[in-house]
Image (spheres, rainbow, N blue to C red):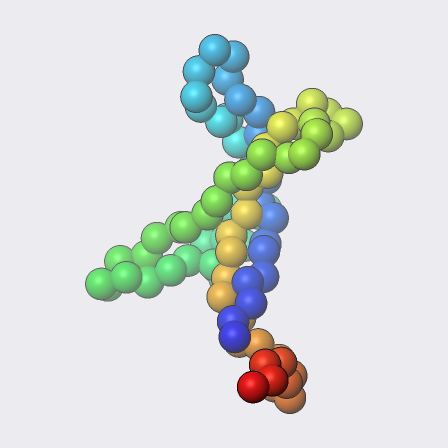
Length: 85
């Protein structure tokens, strides 16, 4: 079974009266993304990320978080539970 690792890249807030989330990402994070987190598809590189709402605003009033979700192989040696007949 696969697991997902999240690399948080920024936070944002919803634009008043619109269904738009404005996200801020630092230059340092952008440089790391370009170096380590681009996805190759058909010879082109893409940035794939997700935006999710926070349960409650943070100390700066940010209501959303942005992250890159990478599929990781499950740790070896982990046993799955079998149901009894």
